[in-house]
Image 1: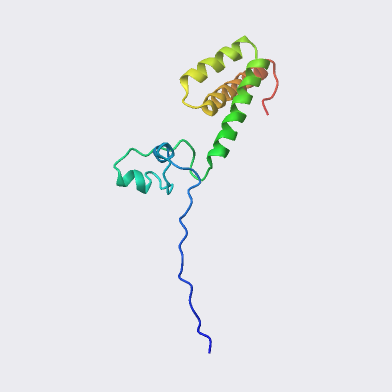
Image 2: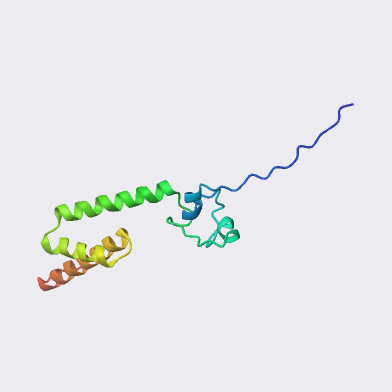
Length: 123
């Protein structure tokens, strides 16, 4: 007669897509809990993330690189006024993406105004 043995059920640690800043500095296993991970909560530490929820660090860095390349192209191709507007937006906003979005919105508005001046439709 053969006996049937049950394998113990193992629960894998859930992997966080990105660790919080304090856990990365300590090289600790972060559970990725938001707004505070368990380790930071247990240690009464301020828990901060530098990536969006559900995003890996690599994805965040790729997005930031793409935004930087976009800004570089805007600086290369833009006129003096557009470059000045971009510089002011970069100083005024926290992220590169916010600054680019701000300048792009301003550019679309000025194109619509110029189109209306010359009797063109903005649609």
